Length: 137
Length: 427
Image 1: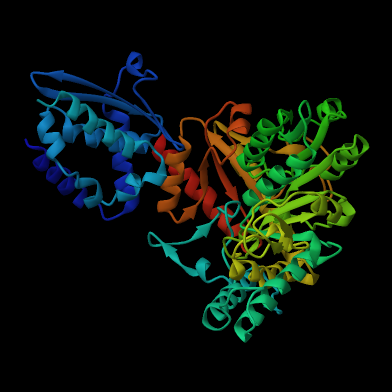
Image 2: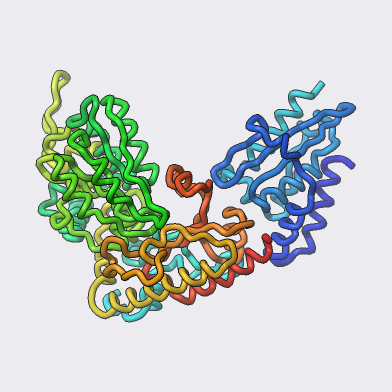
């Protein structure tokens, strides 16, 4: 699936929620269940520091596709991370660079991407793009 | 406003409290960060923008006269509120942070020398740490810290032990924005004076919850913000003893702070304008007058008793309910930490204000805050500009709820019910 197709799939999944608490319940479940970064990968190098929560992100390249692993000490952040990884995992660097991320706004979580929230998510997305740039071409 | 008899009457003055967020009635418990504004303050700001907007102190026209009268009237009001001897003692700033920077920079330039010390309380906000570090760096002086005990109180034994003649100024929190305990500032001031040190009291939270009499305290400086006590943002105060303010060099140079200027030499305006360079935020400062009048009206007569009774109930309720939650650590319980301890007099040193910081095992603070927000409850999380204090308690984040007289026990109950729901979701 292309990045846009996955984004649209997520937007559809979230359309069923009419109540904010149900939506967050689902994000928390995603945060709890999705396998994330290994402990040994939680290095200072992979750490993205925010005021509210920390995010770790690592990246591997296989057959020209990027594979990400990440974690956070905040579970809602982790739930959103799992969505980001679902969107970007196994994609080509050029496609990641070309993509304008839309689904987070569409599912009503834009506030989590405010630079002043300092939860590490904005920096994480930037870091994903930096990895894509480094492995591109 | 004059006929407030109940908490509901108080709430009626605050348009911001009448709204829903995410479809739920707003329960605003982030008052330690800033207060909501009463109608009288909103009206004054409106009136000035519509009718009395002109730069203060400078022009020979009616609008400027009116703006100046409101600005200087607010200075009188501040002086009255904290019992300052004269208008020369009151310097307007943009807020507590600017106030501490002013004192740290000007006082230390004049009085701090190599090898001297600045003493700060261990519960300090970053704004009561960084300006002193900058001043110490300039002078070649060093910082000493009054440690905080496990129950959140300042370790006064250590304070007396650490205090010596090298200490030139002690900068102490009146009430920590994380712990919510009234510090024994009078004891700090007396001891500091006996060693020849000046004292700055950071009253960002203290002015909101305590009756402040700067002459009775006898502190050299008392600093606070307007926006935490119902005035609009961008207002703040330095109270300073006159002889010190006279002796200190100006903080910023520019318009309005001068007597005569030549390219060779400038002489400065008399107090308080010597410290008010540039166009001040005159509308925000003017809003201190209705704001402090409002605050004063809550401290007198029947309504004062209604508020105290409600706050006592909120404090007792939150202390019990938070501690009932499995894995919950509450910081800054002070005297309440010890079973059967005697309660200090309301508002006196050692007493607790309705402000609670806590952590719950297995629940990350920012997760709790986001879920509470969706249930309409506004709380604070993170370092709260107190990283050294967080480190002292071995955490990187806490959740804080802070109440003002317009908050009700019912809101505290709704908060606790919402917190239970959030904890269930996260565990």
